[in-house]
Image (tube, one colour):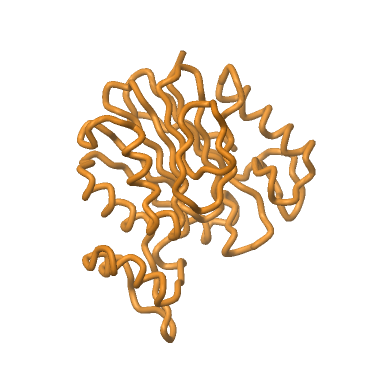
Length: 242
């Protein structure tokens, strides 16, 4: 099934979903349920997949799709629309927030009382730049009252990076060095989920869940930019039910 409900984690009144690449009408190299309209896929196929997504999730409107650029800008509600953003927050009922990924880490947020939700796209650049900190700030509640779900991303055994990536993190927080393992030559293997969890814990979040799937390793279910370069995008969505 291309659309998966996240059950048993978020508070009542909040619903969350994520997609995989199964089903859908996109053809190779975007085979399956591609939701990215910026990757070269036929626009009518992306539109069909997005319409199917809206109907299957029971959304009254299309999700709030962002122009993601690996930055730290946060879209607040639906208007005014930012030219680019890598996170979104809202208190609005019935407004689904969406993040697209193909290896980067999706993070979905909700307050424990369900009054506000958020979504962030966290590749290594966004993480190091502070996209999670910016999102938590815009959520505007005490961090300890938030819950965060860390979705599928490229796993710690597959995400090979250069020494400059490790340096970008340990320059800010030396203890982040534990999220890197020595790889080939001067390369390192980086654990995106752990780097994100470290940052959220420093902010004061205490309740987190992780989906352990590796997008790079599981070609049947997930798009992976690192594996395929030209590929589709999954979506990770959260909404306050109207």
